[in-house]
Length: 141
Image 1 (cartoon, helix red, strand yellow):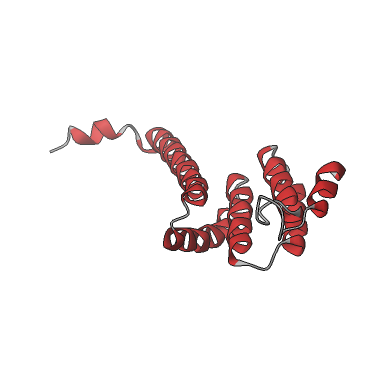
Image 2 (spheres, one colour; image 1 turned 180 degrees about the vertical axis):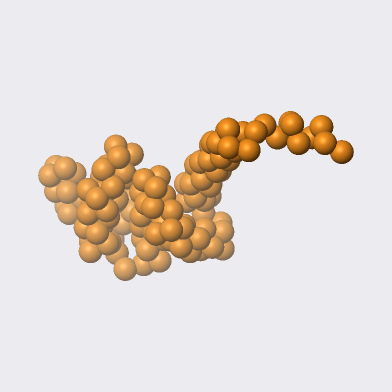
């Protein structure tokens, strides 16, 4: 972590070949995503707070950090908190035609879809026990 931070601070955003894309905010955002994947949402959000403080004050970084926060929140079960961020980022990314960011948002959509299917199957199984199988109702006409 320290080495990545040091390298990011050494780059001159006006002169480097990444044109400012690699900076301390990029380091913190990447660490945040990684901790989110590891199931440590609070540590992940702490790194995103650091990224927010270090980011260049341009729309690109605002949207990217919205996506990262949305991923952490949604993938860790806090859909109500993450959804508004994902919606805002989706609108901006669609308007700008930014496919890579949209891929991440589509990933959240697939995740939510799989969860919805899983919950629907669980509800059906529970309903079969409580109410009897649906098939028995199909016989009545």
